[in-house]
Length: 447
Image (cartoon, rainbow, N blue to C red; front, side, top):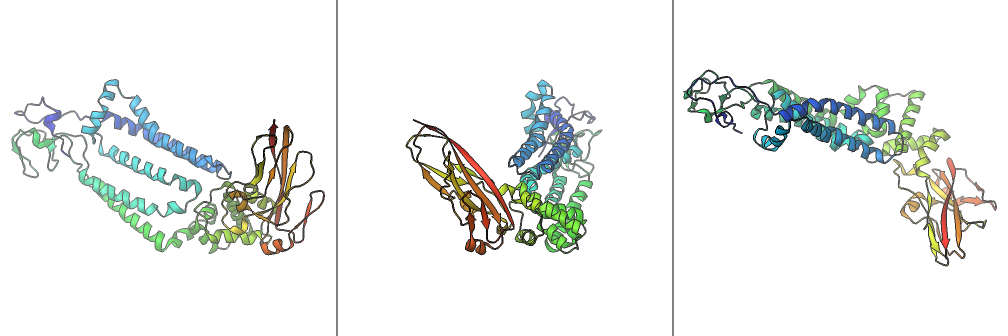
């Protein structure tokens, strides 16, 4: 891109030696970069704190809030503040200036400016993965280094910065020369200012070397992650690996190659259970992690408190029915449950249904002694019945679910569960874990 000096400095006398000129910069970009760095740091810290504080809670809004904070802090806020701090006349020229003067800041700020946008894209694209785990991100580190290095190499060839009037071809400074003349460096004939520029190319090889180094490091990192990733993870302390293992297959496999003390194994169990309870396992768990935890769950390797914490999100249920109906209108009462992802299907609890109890009638309708897969409740095909209200008033419908976890599903189906007249139950073969959940739903019946 050419920036001819005669279009920017029309008052220069071409018969006089070329004088030193006042270097002018893009005020918006300079102010933007001055504000962006502290705002970006504050935003990243805020996002990290948000993810860490709420990572052990099953809150679906956390990734959305983290993404919103990142967009506001990394993109919107620096732009708005930089624009607000500009003089009014400069604001009016901003659109035109950005079209005609895109490299109007020093090269150091240009590098920060491009790095800022590159980093922003990298963070925003990968933030959903970071809130759920690290496996997807770790393989992209080398790729980002390669892309960043190539960008540096390319920018070195084309970057320009505000400066003194120079040769348009080779960017040699021409201060003190009288036109027409020949460029002392490249020999091109300079007839007038249209053959010069006040946006010379950057004559600094440090950025070229930086780009080459980044590219080489990216290639080495990519090759190591693909071919010899064990070398990296074997060098990471076990404490860090335990933190990463629930969301990183590579970190988990590295831990399997090490000898864990009982205390370290307990930390790993708790880390995995917290990850399941938080709902951050989508796309990051593999069979080996889920199988490892299932083996301990079914061999007395987990305490009842740990099982309670791990399975609590999967025992939520409700009665799906309208809240207001007319007398004589048939309605369907159905038990439903929310979606949830478990890393091993054996860790999904099943339910036994104790029946619907309507108002003061103690009769348990549709009571079942065979297990209900949780998937059926999620899909809307759980226990159900048709009920016809016969009088107006407020009716409370209650239901009981007995959630169980047991590896021997066939045996549970074979012996089932025995319901006692008072609504209590007993198992022929006690499960590994059980929980009784009482749910209710209020229906207003009107004439």
